[in-house]
Image 1 (cartoon, rainbow, N blue to C red):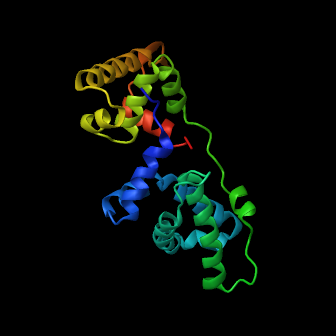
Image 2 (spheres, rainbow, N blue to C red):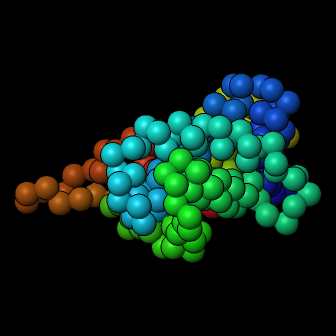
Image 3 (cartoon, one colour):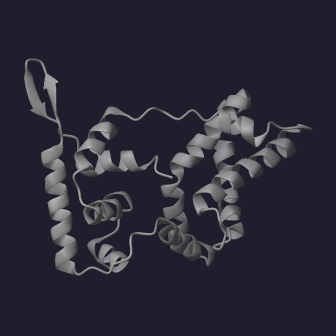
Length: 209
């Protein structure tokens, strides 16, 4: 059984968006919404006046996102994630120059430097500890099912595993994760950490590149 290939998985969604399946485009936009926020943050750091023009910037992002899809080369050494980030930054620089009349614009390096990555939240740290004991197959299925929001059927198609195997692995993965969730102190007692598993895992995976 071949390991999960993240690039191939993303490329398949990009291809479907490229040939006009808007649902897949919306799916990509949702997956990379955090990246749009990061780039907007970087732009706002070097051009403070953009902090009052977020709607305009995200309007431009919509069309720039389509451009990034159409110019992406599947045989490139760069993943779509890297291509998208580079493409949005460069197109934003050109747009700012054109719309606001700047003869020179801040470099891509300066914009990237303005992106301040937040330290991992407490629940992501806890979830990381809770998933360490999962097997590779279990982690793969939790990733596909929780973060990518695939149905059980899609999980079977993507992995090539049978229905019983997928259902049993996921059931055991969620049960083990729940058991491994650490207890936190509340007053004089120690109580079970009760954050929903899929929400914590999604937040953890948002920073995976």
